[in-house]
Structures are given as C-alpha cells and as structure tokens.
Image 1 (cartoon, helix red, strand yellow):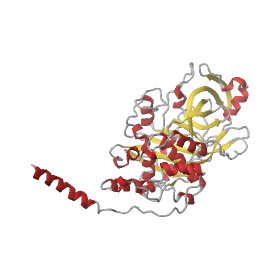
Image 2: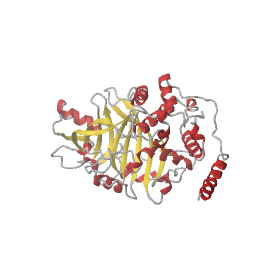
Image 3: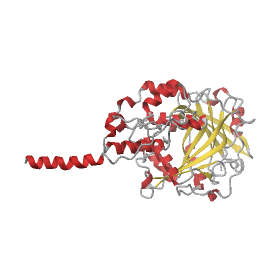
Length: 443
C-alpha cells in the first residue's frame, strides 16, 4: 500500500515539476506614456489596476507556480489589450478619462478587479475611499458644454432614402435601418462624455420589456442606442446637437453564442461608417458588457410596469404617468429630448403615431390634427454607469395639438403630488416652446 501511495505521489509530482519549465513570457517594459492623472489618483490605479493593466510585471510568488502562472498570464494579456495604463497617456485626454469612467463603472458593479484575483491578492481590493478618489477626479457634469445655435440644437437634416446602404460592422453584423420605426426603451444623460442616448427597441424587445421577460431577452430582440453630442442653449437647457453614433445589439442565443448570445455593431457619424478595424472589435463590446452578464449583458434599465428578478433591472418609476392620461406616450414616436440642469429633469418629446412610421424630422412633421406629448421626468444616477443619469419619476405630461404645422391646443397633466412644469407659465408660451423644439439629427 505504501509503495502504491509513493507511486501515485511520484506520478503526480513528476508532471508537476515538468510543467514548471513550460513558461511563456509575460512581456514587461518601462512605461512609454503613463496615464495623466494627479498623484492620489495614480496611487489608486497602481494599487488596484496596474498588476494587470500595465506593462509592469507584478506577480506574487504563488502566481509563479504552474498552472496558476498560465491563468494569471492570460488574465494579464487579456487586460492589457483594451486598457494599458503604461501606454494610454499617448492618447487624447478625453480617451484617457473615458477609460477611467468605464473602469469606475466596472468597479462599482464588482466586476473589476476580477473577484477570483482579489481572493488571493487582497491588497488589490477597491475600497470606498479608492472609488471616491476616482469619482472626485472625474467629476462628471463639470466639463463645459458648447453653446447651441440660436433656437436650440442643430436642425435636423433630411433622412437618408437608403438607410440600409451602410456597410456591415467588421465583425459581420449587418446594419439595420428599421430602427427608425422602433419605440423608446430608455433615455440617458451622460455627464462623462457630454452626450445624450436614446435606446430604442423593436417590437419584440418592446413587448419583452413591457412584460418583464428579460431574463434572458427573447431571440429576435433588437436594440438601437443612438447618441448625440450635447449643446447648451442661452436659456440653460442641454439639448442634442450633432449626431454621434448608433450601436446595435441583436439577440440570438445560438447564432451569437460565441459573443454572449448577442450580435454587436457600431456605426459613426451621419455617413454611418462602421466602427473598428477588424472582427476583433466585438471584444470591446463583450468586454464592456461583461459586468452586467446577470442582466443578460444589457446595461439599460428599460421603461416597464413589470417586475423582474435581479437588482436594478427595470425602470418602473418612469412609467408612473399621471392619472387621467388616456394614452401611453411610450407607444408614440420619439422626436427629441433635452435636460434642465437647474431642476435635474430630462424631457422627451413624442409625436402621435398617425401611420407615417419612423422618427419625426423637420422633413416629416406630424400630420395635421396630430398631437405631440412632452414627458418630463426627474433624473437620478444610473446605477449601472458612473457619470450617467437616467429618467426617474414622471413630473408632467404636456400635450400640444398641431394644426397646419402650428400649435392649436395645449393641456398639461402633472403627476400626483408633483407640480407640473407648466404651472408657472402661460399655456400659449409653453405650447409654442414645445412646437418649436428641433427634432434630433438622425442618419
């Protein structure tokens, strides 16, 4: 028996010793261009991030033992590819800050540093003081916003007559121009990059959100996340200016099994130039969405009266429309939006669906007799993304009826116990304000 035991131990020991010599390198070199941040921020990054996200080689003794070494090496190389604090200093300051915003969002969600890494490397755990240091440095909402042209945002340009002419994403996802007919699922006000986002969903996604069937989202669900650069009017409102990009997510559990069950793509500017050099661009998408894998890789908290399992999954507050409202504005077509930093509110203008379909532009105004509804919500911090605010509780719904391209009637409904926006303004003045809001630019 003793001989057998020694044989077993010897049989295991020899392979263990042999694999210690199979040691692919972990490249290391001096920092070429470190991130440009104050010393106190640099100290946090060095403690919590540099072990994986830098060109330094900082392994503990137990990391050097195989097979742990192979696992640590893979984690380091995977981490350096999208974010390397030893080289990111060569990029524009905006890119550097954007990387930090994403890092903070992942830290808040507990996704970074990797939980399995901090089990043995407790010194890399992110403390509340660490997070506060990073947040104070980033200070969203403090950066200046360009002034808008007189009357509001840039005027909408004609919609392309061939919206599906855009080339596919480098990873193969085709551009889907039918998003013009999709409904609004959420809206966010981004202080980190001074952008607005509208998240639209096709009929399958809209129905799934309404019914709370989002674990997982059903095959065929499609999201379009549209982004515009922000501008500030002389009156102090933040409005959408230049169209920035559109991102698409397409659910197909089997078709896109290799990329977490989703197809991903991004197109920039009004000419819809596909983003990325090659098919590996999809790794940016899957890597960014990994922290919300428990929500089927979806960051968005969709407007919904339904409940769903999980923490912070649905946005129920945003559908608390005033009693007496005879329609659901979310079933109408979004036209534009703006935020008021003085009242911490965000507003979306919807146009009644009269059969024309598609987002309304200045070349496709609401039909005569159709109504427009301006919904105003309070804003609150987005729990999934540091530096973003999302629509929260409904403040009011203001309705304007159009006639011959002009406003012909106005009424306002305030949420229970909340003073409506129109309470201190003349109906005629408010009606003209709503009717004169510029539709967003869309490709």
